[in-house]
Image 1 (cartoon, rainbow, N blue to C red):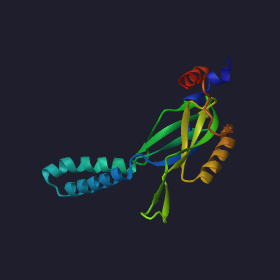
Image 2 (cartoon, helix red, strand yellow):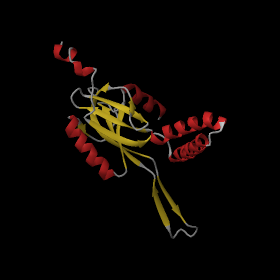
Image 3 (cartoon, rainbow, N blue to C red):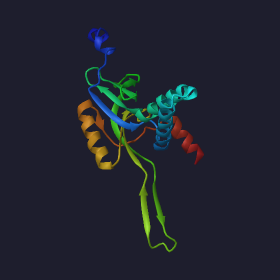
Image 4 (cartoon, one colour):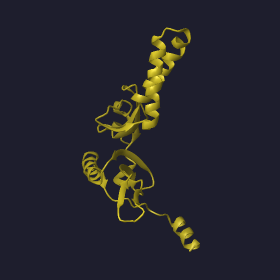
Length: 191
């Protein structure tokens, strides 16, 4: 067995070499509601009324929690571990480190839909693209995945995936899940 790997202190002491922030943990509507609750909590606390001194700080802390929560990915190049983190109050990070050894590929998946709308006459059409390009670490059979980054455009996703493939020594490939023989038999039976 590889004694160096088993005795390495770095296995438990990961530090983030690459941090990728993917945005807010809560939806914009919930953030708006949390902002209003935080403002109401601040006003209630500053009113120095007995019920305001009890409920105000709760609303204020809850609102700040929702407004400052972010999620993303940390990558440790030294130990070859990755984690999805959730950051609260802008500095408290939590998440479980997992080894990157099981992930051999980097793929881009386009999720969401493109909507086409037109007026009554059909002369004016509008294309609304509500899709996201997500870059994933994938296992060799593309059955398990780990989100690295959410990109706004295909070009940005390709550029990021190529950069990460080089840094992480992974293969940048197209999404092509392997279908087991059992599943193929079931599909043939249905036809």
